[in-house]
Image 1 (tube, rainbow, N blue to C red):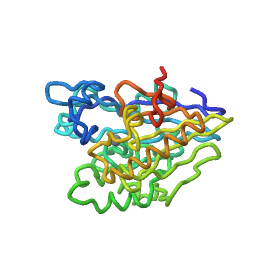
Image 2: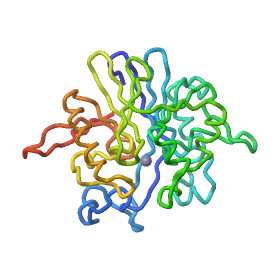
Image 3: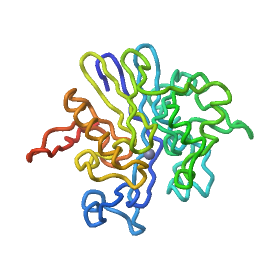
Length: 283
Ligand SMILES: [Zn+2]
């Protein structure tokens, strides 16, 4: 798909499932299951998407899924059995690129489902999956990941980022960051204090990879629907308002990272004042 002179590809690291309460927080099941049905174990399916951007002579990969270092036990917990390894790398090859061609990896944040594919095993060592890339990470996010607390410990796995810090492949940035003339990040706190989204702007068009600032379309339509995963729920709501207003002003293409059924959309004013809808677009 083209955004002005930039080209984007949505890639997949597979599908997973987890308890619906995680994504819908305080919202009662009777409400959310009308939108996203759960299985007999109360789980909802969700996608692990990455975005490949070809722009300004660079190949930029945003997020890397769970990756290929999962143990059999983790695969079972994440309901990813039978999906094999090289899910993201295979998808990258499908669109014509190999891991060593990637110039830049952006991690929206360092939760395991967003940076697990940053690194791979090489014998008993853990090395960069994308050997020629610099990996862009927010300083505040790295601090959270290096010093997790009781609540965040279960998703910050050091093997996904410490080897890159040690090898010098990580570029630590502080605040909104212009990566190339048409690709930039915006810090969007809420899900984590150092979370960032990625914006592509070229030839008067705009697209935004929302990551966990708003990973399902319904979370944009209903601002009070905030995932239980979010560390700063009131910040999440403010961030979504800001992103929604920005997207409306720029008629931006929204890209949802985890929504099992909606990948692309555009936000539109709804019938009632102060209500907004996401117009779903087919890929
Ligand atoms: Zn996530």
